[in-house]
Length: 595
Image (cartoon, rainbow, N blue to C red):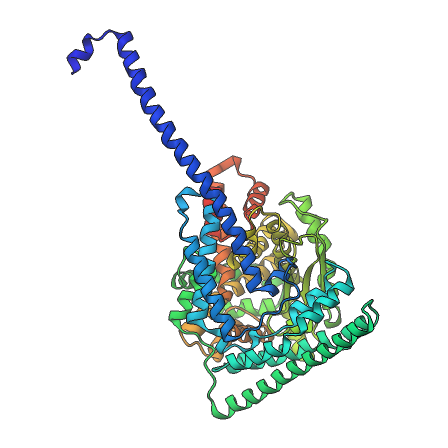
């Protein structure tokens, strides 16, 4: 063959080669055209699937829809009965079967991510119903107040229309709490006590303030009479639930028959994978947290040696961790007064906005309001500060930065809390919760073209971003590289690391309260009030506390990877804006899209 080819004249060889190449190219074009057509058909079909999935999600969860700014089902309050739970479970399984008919290889990069996010959400929902079964042991999961408060305080339609919506919704409140009593078979003592506290707070939503709004409204006499009857029935149902829970609490204490709040290693590992959606396992992130704790101790010791003589005239303690703790205690005396706590938070926000803008760190949107307010009564009991975002359907609505006042603390407790959230630590808290942390990230998320990514927000990405911004701001010069501020950030970041260590140890290793307090106070340098609050939080939740460190480590390590890969072409603002453009996706998916 080789000899024969040598005898073929060059023009003829080229012509034959061209024919062969054209034939191959034609076949490739045909195959490629067929694949493209297949992908277009599947893409259109998947878009319809996503639309149907989201619509059914809101039908099943009208309260969640309200928090996302979707008001089509605002007058619906679903009763959490066993029959409805079985129906919802079957709908979820059917949706998963429908999803698995799509081949991810034929989807775009954005759709592939949506596919896996939806798959995790559906599988997670099935697991929660069939395996975790918190509806049987967590009485605090039953509380109607939040959605009603949101309807009343969000001006998405006229007040009269919203009051009519509330009236319709209130019809199901008695059945809602009756179903709750039926569901709760093995409650934990801790969740029972939380449910009592929060439902007592819920009564305020249906009290005299709501009654006055109705009296001043344009509702006619008949509507007002019907409204008041339903309001009184709602109060009666909530009070009945509270009384029932109080009896449960007494019985659980008397018989020592409460279910343990510890969920155990098997459930914990599974829950970590569903909730966090990370490349790490629960065991791996625990091991990494232990390593990070040692690194942070070394950094804090280094700073403490440099600052000791500025604050003390006495010799340094031989135990270096005691030295760190004494220095932190001294610096923490600089704090606001208890009556000014909420206003102190509010007053710091403009400075953070200015720093981000002046240093060109990322895009901000001044048209999206941030309102600092006292935490509503029905939301108190777990976190001292939190963000309520309006969601992707109503991005122009207020974002509320909830700050809990110190009304319920005695003088000693308030002083301990204020030392924990001293003048420097308060700045880090505001970076985390507001700018450029949660508030900024959620504003960007609401602009994402993928509703799936915005709605099914990944907690580790959301919390990890907020933690990442704390370090990023200090790295960019916030606070003029003051060593005291860095020391407080290391302490704050130690709390993030300790969250993972505590949560894992409490739920899978049986860590006792005494040992947990020792870890937090003597190794993480937390005030006693903060440590007690964290122990309480760990008894009322599981896995969520690991989201901070997991997400933070993923994001920070990825940024460093991009800096190394891009070299001089790396731009911090571009990195931030692109990272946030993918909505609240799991970090592992954002990394793939950015790469």
